[in-house]
Length: 369
Ligand code: NPQ
Ligand code: MG
Image (cartoon, rainbow, N blue to C red; front, side):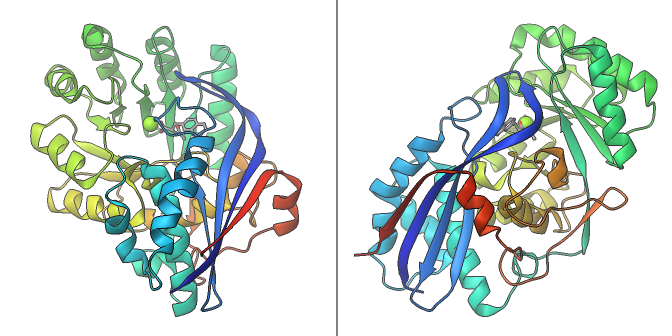
C-alpha cells in the first residue's frame, strides 16, 4: 500500500469512575488516535495506548505524537509500498517507543486487512468466537467501597477479578474479597510498587489462592523476580518487564515469571504479540491479554488477539462500560462474562466520527511528501 496521509488526533474521554493505581489516579483517558489513508482507498485506525504522563512506561501522549511526526512517519513515507509485516523492521533503527510503533503498525494493518476483507481475528489466528472477560479494580477509598465495586463486577458477570495493590493496600483488601467470594478467580497487580525487602509481606498473599501476582517489583529487576518466585508459591506474572519477544524469552529462561500478560502496545504491536503468544504456547506458559483503558478501537483488536488458543486466562479485556459512559465505537457489551470477537474486515468496528470530533483537543494531518 502507498500511504497518502496520516491524521493524529488527541481525545479526552471521561472515565465512569476514578481509576487509582500505585502510580496515580486517572479521572479521564487521554488518547492519541491515528488514522491512515492509503492511495488504494482504504483507511486504517489505531490508538496509541501511552498515558498523558510517563507513569506506567516512559512513553506519554505528546512524546508519542512527537516521535511519530519527527521519526516514525517520515521513515514509513520513504517507502512507496508498505505492508504491516514490514513495519517493525523498518522502524527498528529507532529505539524504544513501542507504543508509538505499535500504533503505526496497527493502523497500517487495519487498512491492509480492510482492503483484503480479512478480520484481525482470522489474520492473527483466532480459535474462538467469544472470549472470557476479567476486570481490573483500582485501589479504593475504603474497604466498603472496594466490596461494592467488586460486587458490581461479579453481578455483571466478570469471570475474574484483579485487585490493584500497593504497600498499605494489600493483605487486608485481598483477605476481605476472598472471604466474601471464596471461589472467584482472583489475582493482584502491584505495578512495580514493592521492593526485594517486601518478600515476607508478599508471601502472606499465598494463603488466598490467587491466580498470580502481577509485576510486584521494578520492571528492570528481573533477578529480583527470580528470587521472589523462589520464596512465594503464588505464580509471578510480568507485565511492564515484557517489552519484546526477546525480553519474554529471557524472563522465562531465568524463571522470573511463569505467566505472561501481553499488551500489544507495550511490546510494539500485534505481530510481536503473536510471536510472544507462540513462544508461550511452545513453553506451556499461560498467557492473558492486558488492558490500557482502550476505546473500542484498541479494545476490538485486543479481543481479536485474546481469541488465540494460548490465551487461557481471562484478560483485562472488559466491556466498554467498565471505563466509559460513551465509547467512540458501538460499545462492547458483555454477555455471560464474555465478549464477541469482531468478524468484520480489519478491526471490525465502526467509528463514531461525530463523537470523536466533540472530544478532540488537537488534530493534525501529515501528508506523505
Ligand atoms: C496494568 N491496566 O495492567 C494496567 C495499568 C494501567 C487495566 O489495570 C491510563 C492509561 C490509566 C493506562 C491505569 C489495567 C491506566 C493505564 C492503569 C494503565 O498494569
Ligand atoms: Mg499490570
